[in-house]
Length: 297
Image (cartoon, rainbow, N blue to C red; front, side, top):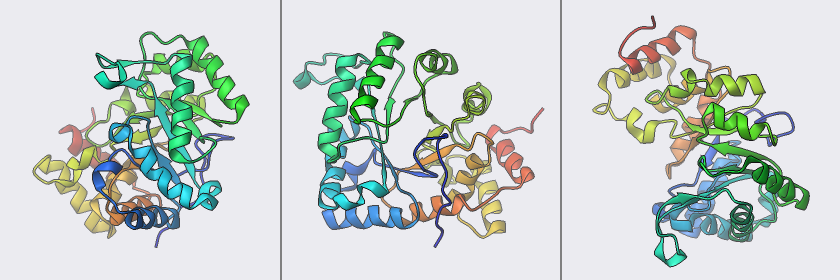
């Protein structure tokens, strides 16, 4: 069994190496016993950070996780809870006639209170603004974050899916611990658009959603050339292809933190193993070449 070495998102931030994603928790149809087993297996591997958002599963996933936490309240101090807010999908029952973003003080405060109630806890380790809001007032958000921190409801803050300029704007008003971004061998933009560079410059670690491209990396038909290289390297190193794909991300000096969201216990094992695997530089570039379809210039 692989267990993870301690690591922090940033100095003073929560200790975390790989996160378990709960986006599809409602779709997994776990029984309470199955959910408890999945969570405890993650914790046993050192995967103690659980990534949520208020709207996951039609606003139902946090409450499902909360059923376990309320029954196991003694585990709270051993895990880290991440949540996000600001997305309002079209929902006539809530009075939302069109999908939109809301980073107002009132919405952030209300969302945090609802998440805390659903999760069965009195604080979040990390709160992220889920999507950039064109109407975001950075001073209002900064003031709201300060209020939440002072009240003890949220310990750290960050953003998700922000461009470097959007991140820089909010970071000029309030400390941000991370930018949660899509990144994988099939989505390498953050390596080249300044996003990971910015994290390195700021001394923070990006979180990464969809690190296996929604499972496409593991399907030979989706990208045959890349899958073949993944399989070859995995065979050479005696690990699973998913472990190689995650290790490829972890090899970046920004030390991205992958979020693995799968009901399979083996997916958690593969993620833990990736944290112990240091890819050689030539392996790393062979994968990049296969992903892009050409060698580096």
